[in-house]
Length: 320
Image (cartoon, rainbow, N blue to C red; front, side):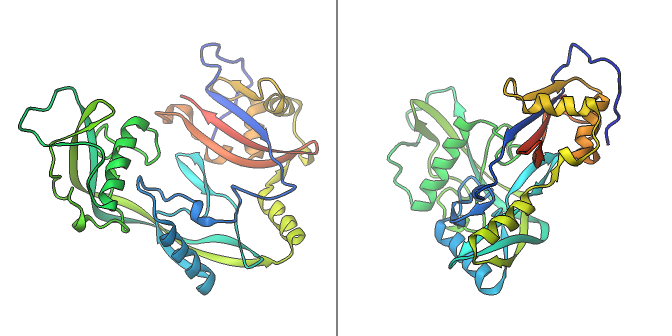
C-alpha cells in the first residue's frame, strides 16, 4: 500500500515511478491474448519443450477440458511487482473459441540436474579434452550445450530469475529431458568447450528447485467471431478511466502518460496525490509496497483501460 504526498518532487530521483502507456487495439483480438497455435508459447526453461509435447498437452486439454502441466505457462502472465498475474487467454479449435483458466497453481520441490558453462581465461593444457563444433553429441545433449552457451551471452537476463550457480545461468534437466541418458551427467566427458574463440569450463550439479505446476481448464465461448470479439474485449478491458470522478491532478498524470512525447509520466518518491489516485484506479496501489522495500526494479504491467475513447495498456515501473 502506498502513502501519497502533496509535497514537491525530489529532484534527485525523478524516475522512481514511471507510468507508461501504449495504445491497445481491441478491434481484433490477437496475441498475446488469442493464441492460434499454443505450441508457440515457450516453456519457462532454457531448453524449450518440443512442439509435440505441447501438442499432447493441448489435445488433452480439449479432449478432457483439463490438463496439468509443469513449467508451461499456457495462460499468459504479466509482471506484477514481485509476483505475476494472469492475463485473459483464449484458444481456437475447430472454429470454436475457448477461454483458458488457471484452476489450480502449485509450487513443487524437485531434485534436478543442471548444466552450465563458465568462461575460462586460461588456455587449456595440452592433455585437456576440448569440445569443439560441430558437437558430436546426442540431439538432447546438443540442445543442452547450445542452450548453456546461449545463456552465457544472454547474461543474467532474468528469464529464469536468479542464476542457480552464483553468476551462472544454468540449463535445467526438466521432466522432458532425460538426465540419465545425458553424457553430461554426473560429469561431462570433456574439460573445456571452445566456442566463438573463447574457452569455457563445464559445470554439472544437482540442485533442489521450485517448479511451478498449473492445472488449466477451458470454457467454450462461441463459434461466432463477432461474439468472441465482444466477449474477449470485455474480458481484456478492465475499466474506463473517463467514467471515474478523478481529480484534475490525476487526469494530468494520465494525460502525460498517454502523450506522444514522452508517453510516460515520471516522479520521485513518495508518490504525489495525483499519481496515487491513478494507481488506485488502475488496481496497482493495493500491491505497491514502499519504495525502500524493493532492492531492484519492479514492474506492474498490463492494465488495460479506456480513457477518452481510446484503449491503453498501462504499466508502472518502480526503480528504487
